[in-house]
Amino acid sequence: MDWMKILSAVALGLMLIALIPRAKDAVSATPKGSAGDWQAAVLPVLAVVVFVVFLVSMA
Amino acid sequence: MPINVLTARDASAAVTTNKLIRNTYTLLAMTLLFSAVTGAISMALNVGHGLSLGASLLALGLIWFALPRTANSAAGIGVVFAITGLLGFGLGPLLNAYLKLPNGPQLVMTALGGTGVIFLGLSGYALATKRDFSFMGGFLFVGMLVVLGASLLNIFLAVPAMTLAISAGVIMLMSGFILFDTGRLVNGGETNYVLATVSLYLSIFNIFINLLQILGLTSRDD
Image (cartoon, rainbow over all chains, first blue to last red):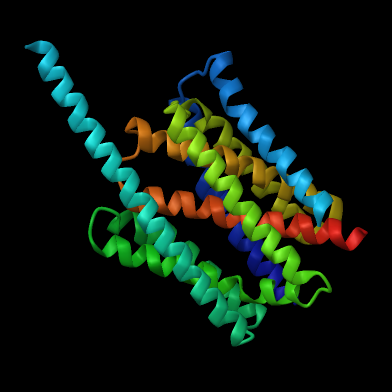
C-alpha cells in the first residue's frame, strides 16, 4: 500500500502548505494573553490529559 | 436614557449570540449523527482503505474550496453535511479494524464516550466562563504546523512512540481549539454558524480518532 502512504503524505504536505500563511496571520493578529488567561486555558487542557490517562488505565 | 439604550443593545447582542450558539450546536448534533450513519454504512459495506482515503481527501477539498464560497448561503449547510458525511464514511475501515481486536468494541465505545466528555466539558467551561480565548490563536496554529510536520515524517518512519506522542499532541491541540472556537462564538469572534460547526466538528473528529489510536496502542502493549 505504498501509494496510499504517498497520497497521505501529499495530502498532509498540501495541508501544511495551506496552513502556513494562516498560521502567520494568526500569530501576527493574536492578542497577547495575560498569565491568568493562559492559566484559564491550560488548566482545562491539563484536565483533558488527566482524563485521557485515566481512560488509558481503564482500557 | 443612555443606560436603557445600552441595556437594549446588550440584550440584542445576547439574543444574537444565543441564537448563534443554538444554531451551531443543533447543526453540530445533526452532522455528528449524519457522520455516524455514513460511518455505519461504510462499516457495513466493508469499504477499503483506498475509498476511505478518497472520501477523506474529497472532504478536505470541500473544506478548502467549497466551504469558504458557500458558508454565507443556504448551500453551506449542504456542504457541511457533505464534509461530515464523507469524513464519517472515511472512518469505516479504521473502525472495522479496531472492532476486530479482542477488546475492540470496548475501545471504540471508550473513545466515543471519552470524546463526548472532553467536548462537553471544554465547551461547557468556555460557555460558562464566557472567557475570550482568542490569545491562543497563534499558538494553536503553530502547534498544528508542528503536528502536521511530525505526522508527515511519521508516515515514512512509522515509529509507534512518535505516533503516540502525535496523538497526544493532537488531543491537546484540539482541546485548545474547542476552547478557542467556543470562546469566539460567545465573544462575537465568529458570527457564521456553518463555519463554527465545521471547526468544532473537526476538533471532535480528531479527538475521537487520536483517542482511539492512543487506546489501541496502549491496549496492544498490555
